[in-house]
Image 1 (cartoon, rainbow, N blue to C red):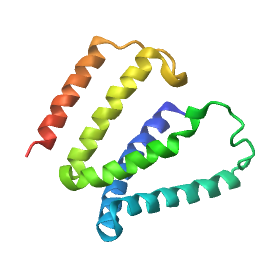
Image 2: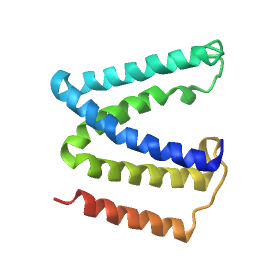
Image 3: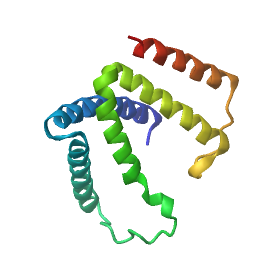
Image 4: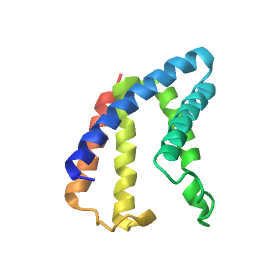
Length: 145
């Protein structure tokens, strides 16, 4: 994928993330938080199952890979969905998004630095650490009451 297209798609996905948290939170107020997370996850699973079948291959290789941790994405997604739909109620869209991005960037910096999970090794730099510190400061300012 072209790098510029990847940036545009990631920015668009970030916008969708905020909308998803707000929609899920509103649904959660009506039917319950865990139920709303399940509805959201089931909807995503249904769409992705259809796309997977249409784009070829289906699921013939499912389970063929012996590395168990490769299959915890659904668990991580459930934690993500439930946490965001609860946190957005308290922090608002901006605060929840700021905190989420800080967590993503902090963990991704560790993953890159140690070359974990098949990602190429990219040692942490002073500039990146400064960026993380500024991000923490920004989150603090955004979530303050």
